[in-house]
Amino acid sequence: MSFFQGLKPRNHFYNTMLCGVCHEKESKYTCPKCECRYCSLTCFKDDKHKEMDNRAIEKHPIKEDTSEDKSKEVKTEDIQDPMLAKLMQSSEFQEYIASPVLQFHILTVLEIINNISLTNEYSKDGRFEIASRKLNNLRLGGVEENEYVEEFVSWLLTWIENYKKENTTTS
Image (cartoon, rainbow, N blue to C red; front, side, top):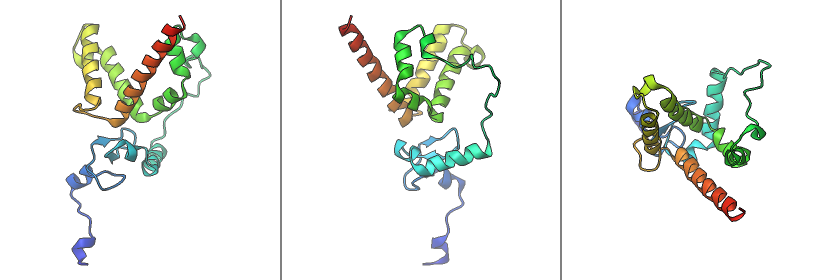
C-alpha cells in the first residue's frame, strides 16, 4: 500500500457528497439538527447518526422554558376536533413528531403559511399553495425529496383514511 492510498481526500466536495453515516453512497439529505449528510432513512435512523445528534445537542443545548406557565401544553381533552384529538393520542404520531427533521419541515411549512414577508404573498390561499408546493417538493420524486417526510405523510394519509372508515361505519 502506497502512502497516498491511506490518505482520505481533503476535497470539501468529496466529503459533502458521501453519506456521513455509511460512507458508501451519495448523500441526498442533510440533518437540520447536526448537519450530517446522509443517503437514506436507514442511515438517518442509524445509531451513528443518533450519536452525532447527541453531540450536536451537547454543543448547542436547547434552552427549555423553565417558567411555571404550563398553559402552552396541549391536552387532548382541550382539542375540539375529535379526529385531531385521536391523532394526538397515537403513539406513532408522537414518535414521528418527536423527530427534529420532521419538526423542522413542519415549522417551515407553517412559516410559509403564516409569514407574509417570507413569500410576499398577501392572500392566505396563495400562501397555502406555496406551502403545498413546498410539501410536494419534500415528497417522493420532489426536488427536495426526504424519505422521512414521505414516510410520515404516507402514514398520516393512511391513518386519516382508516379514521374516516371507522367513523363512517360506526355512525
